[in-house]
Amino acid sequence: MSWIVLHFIGIISYAATGAFVALEARFSFIGVYALGFITAFGGGLIRNLIIDVPAIELWEHTTIFTVLITLTIIVLIPLQWIDHWRRWGLFFDSIGLASFALQGAMLASETFSNDLGVMILAALFTGVGGGLMRDVIAGRKPLALKEEIHAILTILCAIAIWFGWRSPFELTLIVLIVIAIRMSAIHYNWRLPLPCHDEENRKFYSQLFKQSLVKSIYTKEK
Image (spheres, rainbow, N blue to C red):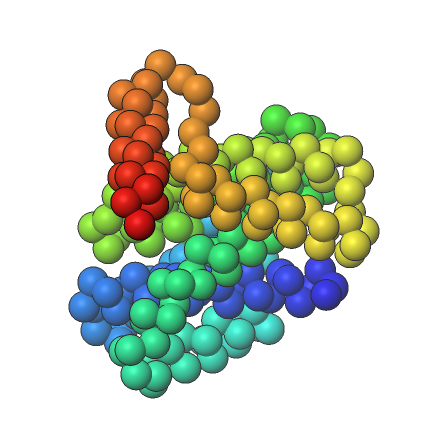
């Protein structure tokens, strides 16, 4: 799968996350389009403001048309499809996170001659900016602020671009690595070993131990 294909999957995924959040929040179809476009382009807008690139460069006809078609399909499909999106949403959202972060890092690299600090900022805001705006507008706790893995993965994307990983194969590999790490982090509840997480980690492992103990007793009784 080429980088271009993954990039467009990322755009579609981010637009779709905005649309489904709008549907869950019971927004009108106008809200679906608004939240979809904000999620797809919000991060890029923040990035362009940071690195002083004209915002007009975001409005690529192919990308806008892709987002518009995606949102129109979602408006017309039955609401039961939201349940299917919940199962696969994080997977496709991970593709969007990686592809947007890489895009931000590459644009910052071209504009600021491979300045790592600017590349990290551009990757971070491009990757999570749209999702932050989406969640705030929908009245939800921003997912990017609850999952620290978001920021860590965007930084890793920026570092990979800084090291010169720019071929389609290398970019695709980075996206696949990001997907694997993020899905594993969600499944296993990985958190950085910081003091502020001590109580949360203690509760998690306590619950895990109780579940294992109950399962062991049940197995012996059988």
